[in-house]
Length: 125
Image 1: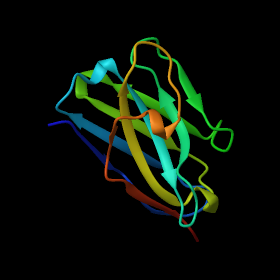
Image 2 (image 1 turned 120 degrees about the vertical axis):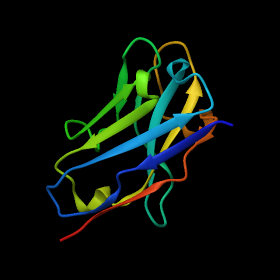
Image 3 (image 1 turned 90 degrees about the horizontal axis):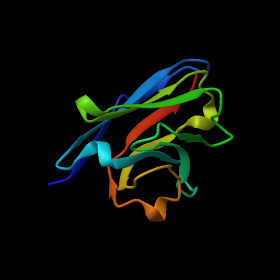
């Protein structure tokens, strides 16, 4: 059974850092694009970042570019989102998602097949 489990969320002060993890099981992880999305109360789900399955390409939303770094460890079947210089507007539930794709990546949530349950990130003093 395919499963994605996020962890690493929590409460952090503005300017702080968190690293989210997305542990995958039940599928061949290295064939899948991994995307990170977030949803704040009353807002639509937003694509934050993605990383390709094969060519190492990545994408970042303008709102997180230069502050967030996406990575993956195929040997551990785990994806990561390192979040630095966090701002209150980064507060949201963060989700990882997966879809099989050969090259490149994208952050249209409608295109992703599998989703984790989400982890809350709260940035507040």
